[in-house]
Image 1 (cartoon, rainbow over the protein chains, first blue to last red):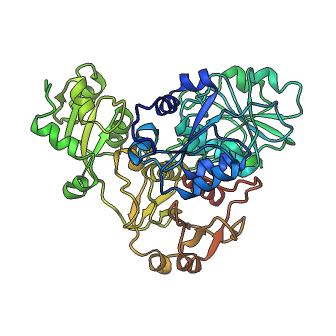
Image 2: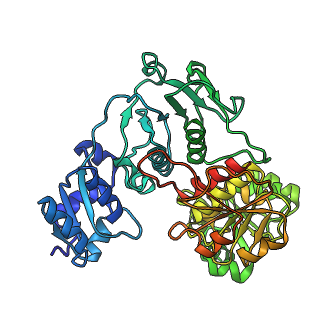
Image 3: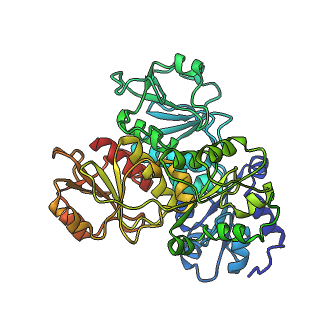
Length: 242
Length: 242
């Protein structure tokens, strides 16, 4: 039983809360029973698993997978975790690889900045059977906060890196749909599959990105307020296109 | 210029981060230029306004309204604020009063627990021109986190306390719609206005609440994942009923 957060393994695990360390190592931090189960159910094997003594469910899983389990105290678990109220276990996994663009609906996060929004959109995408694309300047979708907002969805859908939004879909049969706050169509009559482009919270999509899309989509808003949360807007757009 | 967070006024303002203090005083904390502007634009008068010396926009507003402005240092502002990266100003307002149920679409937060979800739903409601109802056990919608997620929407729509969901709408012409994860209709053909009941993140609506509704609504999900964020699900339901 490890009772000190100064143990070398504990220090290495805690460092994965930082994006730079995740990029350097290619590893991610998976916290809590629900995310841990989602990752394992997706066929991923944990490299490190920290759990408290009373967490018998995790011991059962590591026993079945044949991977080592490290018992830690509640206070060590809390010091390693990113969550404010961490739950056992905390595990380290290799970051899943990125594939190529699948021939299905895909929502592309174009320079999204908020990890909670990114995770929530990934959760909606998994619920509607969509894939997810991320541009190189989108926030790290493998951060603890994004994973929490995703509720396990990250491990259940294809995730693709889209280096250049304008050229990527030119050779594919996707209808490219730009989500815009004003001036777009309320309904898209084109055939799918769709590539739905969602811009950053602060700046939206560029004029070039909107112009290069096949159609622009605007969610009709009857209220005088006209300001949807970015994850809500993206999710409604996916819903209307599904 | 106040440079100490131990000043009595600063201590009183900082206390408003706590729900108990907000309930005791009937006052709320409004942080940052966007929320401050939304509250003022709604016709509310601030009781206290703290701003940094460089925040000339706030000085212009307090001058126009004829209310006092207290200059504070950046570090005092940070110590008083709830936000991790606070922006000037920080203001104290009386909590807006609750009205009676209006004869328009209304989304009712039934024991919702997450302040971010509550604020995001209020933001969507304002965008779609809906009112908002809250049950007594719903999380405090006037918390700093809920206000941040609302992006100013709290000040632009009617907010109503609904003591008893089942009886409140019996004398009104609203069609009561229960949002349920499984087993509801994909479309509602009844006429509006609608009262959309949204249950807590962990438990949803009770069987009694669903049974007392005129119709149950389920958002169709084609993916194998089937787990939308509560604010996303409520927003899509409002969108389909609008």
